[in-house]
Image (cartoon, rainbow, N blue to C red; front, side, top):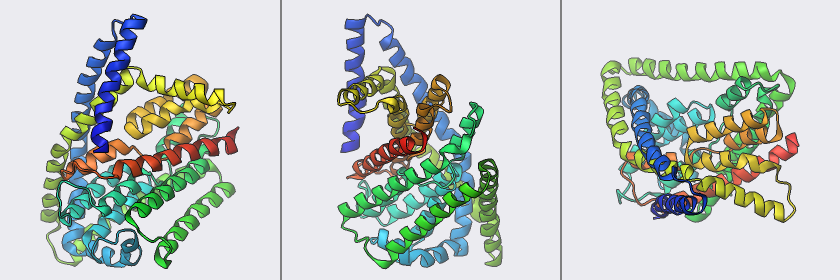
Length: 410
């Protein structure tokens, strides 16, 4: 229901703002620009889905090998003591546990191309447990928020953009992003746990959070004792080695279990194609809504309004230039990247607002895109409180990103 209202709001607000610009500012091109944005974003949605087809086919094929070889089930049993606390409604040893783990691991390594197919696989398996096929279940909501909160160890793409735009130390945003994304994820987990009455004060859940804290702490420590350039190089290498090792390990496990790995791969790849086609309407709906909202100027008005209020109460407003990236981040990953790049070009990659924009971009993931793709892939249209929980995680990430930027760069 919330998602429905938000989508309607994109169009209504865009129309009202466009009328104001036409009547009071004499902008006779605004409606032409809005309509052009609907055409271009519809095309972009189709091209995006088409581009996902190959990636989905590859990784769902690999996951099918793991499923038929029993590897996914083995991973599910291994992870049950921890994940059953966060996902109490998933039966112990269910294959969804393994797919969820694979998805979260790929996300943490910044491997978006691998994470999305694994996430769609997990969502399909969660849908098999769903008694109401059009309504999101508790495990689906927890899984979705873990994705939207954007827990990531190495923000490769952000550091790459900073290097291309001439940053003196492209990796100087590494630690702030690491801390920010941890706060965003922890907030998301707590919010969902409260709404679903999940007790996090148990040994398994605290152990899981503790392991993450140690892992993040170790990475922060390493970043202080070795060159950040060297760390960036080796983190990319490590991520790709792990990714290819997963592929080889799944195939060899299939060989050891004496299954026909090629046939299993092809069977899974077919699911990738049908999934890519299924999500097209959902992508079109949200990318068009986001496009008209942005093109109308509503986004700029929102940011300027916040800047005015913040300045009026005497708070430093240097961070306001990063807010367009912050708000766009929840709507569109490519849009947020574009605004982040524009901000660094305008103010400089090493400026406070340039760095803040980079940290904000890495704070969490694209909530509405993930909602559209993941829920759309299994036909969920009643999202319950998934949007609210995801946006609360987003908000905590934005606030944490601004605070961390002041701590590290101001």
